Each structure stands twice: as structure tokens, then as C-alpha cells.
Image (tube, rainbow, N blue to C red; front, side, top):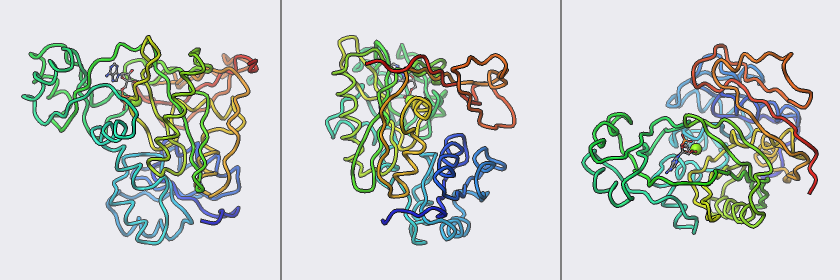
Length: 359
Ligand SMILES: Nc1ncnc2c1ncn2[C@@H]1O[C@H](COP(=O)(O)OP(=O)(O)O)[C@@H](O)[C@H]1O
Ligand SMILES: [Mg+2]
């Protein structure tokens, strides 16, 4: 695709905070943005040129949206593949591409794909009924986490299982849907790699943040991670290999468990910009949102050089009603414009620039 010219229109499927920050980055580069979301009054719609409110299966609305855009991308990986096909049938590309979407939408397909491309994961078993759980649990060492194959996020759709007697209650807790059981990993820490792949197949990654979760939700990301350079480099190579294997275009995030001996086990990937990369706009030469828009627009990749040591703190639920007077002078606040705070809801984040990078 020849590079998009300023004034062209980029469509974004999904209207949450990721779309909002992508739309803001696109506007800075001179693009118009249209949001497509089933939600009424989505956070991204209020910073975009326009918004379509329609369901994912509304072929007429999807076609009209496609006609109004030069290229389409997404901020939400569970956009049905059928919706993407409607847009493509209307003659517009949807990036990152069908492969990235179809592989990442199902944890079984995702982990099988990672393993097939030489990227080790936690051991897992396919679960089709509660009665599959006891034998799977035993083969995984007696402790595991049951995860729905589809549509889990922020720890939702998951249940820990420590005893075969918990099989039925765990199965009910996740909604009695097709699942995987994954062995419990006693990790030393978690990191993720944000990688971008351009339309010419060039890849570039950012320094991997160390990620801390609370109640299954990301709470904090920190750079540098404190890990040995060799471990970080291996994680970055794996993420770039994954982006190539998928033929991905845009930003992708690959999460890892790091074992005490430095072994990396991939957990999952998101075929989009990611919460653990929210510090990049403030701490790096090019942030993840701008980079994603560059990829979608067919522009060259920006430099990802990290300029600051930094931490990113999520503002969840009531914490989103942050008092601006209490911010430190190196704190950069981003709020998502959500109308109300609910428990577990991501309302915004703070990126704290700790010090200029020294190494
Ligand atoms: N097999 C596991 N062993 C130990 N902790 C896990 C395991 N799977 C998930 N977790 C913890 O739960 C968090 C969320 O799980 P994840 O699979 O990434 O789902 P989500 O889609 O909700 O992000 C992980 O970042 C990790 O902290
Ligand atoms: Mg995760």
C-alpha cells in the first residue's frame, strides 16, 4: 500500500481507551479517525472525527464504515472475523490482518501456534467438560488455572483449581464453556514485549517492562525490568519472530512469565497496542500508539529508543478520580474520559518519569 497522506481517514474497530489513544496519535499525524463501536458514547468517539454506533453483525453499517475509511484497524481483538470480512469485501484493508486475529481469539489456537513457532508456553490441556479436569490437573502437577478459550481479559473467565474436587465449581465459575487448563507457573516476574511490524515487514521492539498484576489486572509496569540484557533480548527476538510468523502489521504485545532461572514462557499475546506499553509515549522516542498508526498508514517505523526510566500505574475504579493537585512534577496523567468508575474498570494511568536513562 502506498503511504497514506495527511487528511486520509483511519477507521478503528472498538471505542475504548486504546482506540482513544490511537485516535489522538493519528490526529497528531494529520489523519482523520472514525470509530466503530456497539457502545453508545464510547471514550474513543469523543476524540475522533466521527463515530458509528452499530453491532458487529450489522453488515450494512460495516460496509458504510468501510466506504468512509481509507484503511481500518482495531483496538479490540475480539472483533468477529466475519465483521472483518465484510469490511474487506467492501474493498478496505483491516490491519493487523486476519491471521493475528484468528490465532489470538482462542487460547488453544494461540498457545498451539506459539509452540509450533518455537515459543514455549506453560503446559496446557484442552478442556471440553468438567469431567476432563481431574486427569488434566494430575498431569499438570496438581495445580492449574482454568481459562475460557475465548473472550477472557483482565483475569475474567479464569478459575484456579487446586484439587480434583474443585473441577465442577471451577467449570461453572468460567461459565461452562470450552476452556484450557494451564499448569501453575511459579514465576519470578512477568514481562511483556511490545513489537511493531511495518507494511514492508520491518520489525522493532521496545525495552520490555516488568508487569505486576493485582486481582488479574495489570497494576504497574516498570522499565528497566531489572532482568539481564540476554533475557530481555531473547524475549524481544521471540516477539519479533511471532510478528513475522503472523504476517502482523502494527503493534503486538507478547506477555511472558520469567522463571527464577531466567527461562521465558510465553503467556499470551494481544494483536494490538497494550496496557503494558502505556509508558512508551512519555518515555521513548516513539510511543506505541504513534507507531501503530505509522504501520497502518504504511509509514516507516519510528525509533523506539528509551529516554527515561519509568513506571506506569493504572488507575482502576475509584482511583480514576485522581486529584490533579497530588501529581508529582514528573507524573504524566492520562484519563480515558469514562463517564463512571466501576470496580475493576480501567479509568486512566499515570506514567512517572523516574530518571533520564543512564546506560
Ligand atoms: N499459568 C499461570 N500460572 C501463574 N499465574 C498465571 C497463570 N496464568 C495466568 N496467571 C496470572 O494471571 C494474569 C492474567 O492471566 P492472562 O492469561 O494473561 O489472562 P488475561 O487475558 O486476563 O490477561 C497473568 O498475567 C498472571 O499474573
Ligand atoms: Mg494477560
